[in-house]
Image (cartoon, rainbow, N blue to C red; front, side):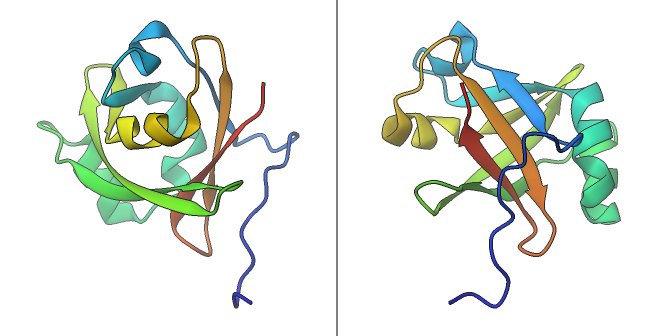
Length: 124
């Protein structure tokens, strides 16, 4: 048993990052895109300061983070990089190969402080 349990999905958590998948996110894509403003509010406050600074500086420095599938218990490492008013998560295609998401699916992402990773779950 793990020392710290995984942070579960909580529907009423105001820091959830809810992403409804677009054709860009699922059609042979290698990335998923998330709005910069949403990440600045719901993700960056929980990340280490040095990571935030590197992601937000111009030009942005890419950072590797773990994205944890709460259902399958699989962590996929992706590269996050600023792209205009969005952030792209490169390596998303590794998740798509396992999960078979489609356009319109909603994925919830939330930061797990104890494991310093971004958890996710298909919610609709």
